[in-house]
Image (tube, rainbow, N blue to C red; front, side, top):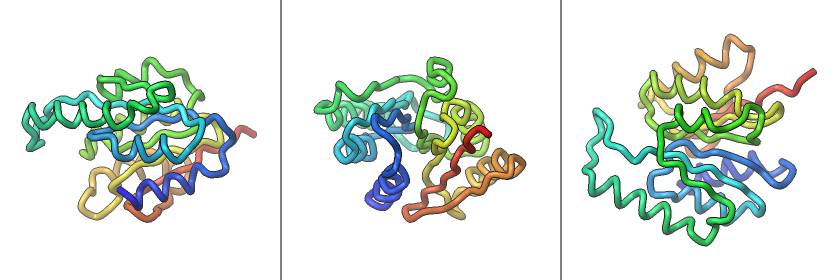
Length: 174
């Protein structure tokens, strides 16, 4: 988590404040609290359905614990965070296009879910903003495929940072 937090903080460093962002896939809120602590004037949407999915080896008790842990960790910043207990796709319908400075996608890593997250959230990021995520590594071939299928045809370069972080800068309007 330390490497992904460090990479994301560096990427967001030059953005004007306040910064509005969304984290897709919060789990216990470690990245959320790290971002909220280290980036003054960050307004963060924390999106996670906290539901059991088909191939996950998580019990209902573990899922509830993760949700409570995320709420507790980020409570000191409750004036700058909104927790949305819903799927990424449903949450995206409540966020205006071009209204976010960044999105960090770290939810379900299966191809079809990453594809849906990228398709749903890229329009929400303003021109010049950052679309990024986690677990860009050979053990996640579906994630890598979904990311490149979306961005490569647009001529946008996917870059990699420490902590298995990937990113794309959304082009500014010309």
